[in-house]
Image (cartoon, rainbow, N blue to C red):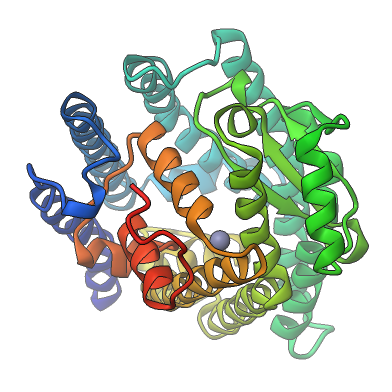
Length: 419
Ligand SMILES: [Zn+2]
């Protein structure tokens, strides 16, 4: 009985927390912007950004509410058991049963989220002028994503089920942790080279002023690069971005074509200097360590709770199995994931300040970084004054104003009213 209470409390509790945060956040939108931020939006655009923000919030809450209701119905009407009975009828093999069980649940949840994804892209993003995707690209993305998702899920899930089902290996959770970590690390190499090109076109940046400037900066900072690439982000959205992929000497810079279009060479160099700062200051490595440790913690909890009869009774299950344990323990693990997330976000925000300072120091001032961030925020209709609680719990980056003031206080801006 108390398992049911715990699980319902987790599901409803997180939904409620989400609701409270979003309500506080909507209330914290101000009609009058802080003095520093005034130049970023004109009145009309500021109104548009607020309308965009509240539409996204409403949409997110509707989706979260529906998910919660479906989850509760699945539990109380014995939906998980019904799916499990199908898997049991098909085969005797535990790994295959697990794959069928997981696959049905995944297809079901994708079918629920599909209309939301469609509405988000073709109604909301379209209305605010961000959407560049077509129905064809949208459908192809779903097909490609489903195939890739199925392969990765089948691989990981069968390895985990195998380790926990066999009684030949002592400390199975340690072995499973090791195996999954090895796959995660391998994926970090494969994602940029194999997976991302399935969705987007990457081409080496042609010789130009921008390329020269990036290479000159990288050389000055002794930063080994495996290439500078341009990605056709404009295929789906007008929103801009840049990122690094890979490790060691395979490190690649990827710039969205939309980012290159909208920024000066100097601004782009500062954005990249910030990203290189994350490498130089070992931020990527620290994030990786946290990820590996939390995976370990999850497998440890999994080991403690696997096949727990109370837990299976709470999910109205007739048959106890390793594969269903894995799914149920993920629900139980949610509060732990949440706490880990808060710490990771805190750490990440600290890293952002450090990378900003690194970029500003190595580029003679961070003015162009602030200009770039202002343009990015304005183009993406970003919320300039989020509620502090939302920032604390969910933001991996400090707000624009915080980053600006941090550089200013460190004396790293040449012009204090960069507006
Ligand atoms: Zn960063």
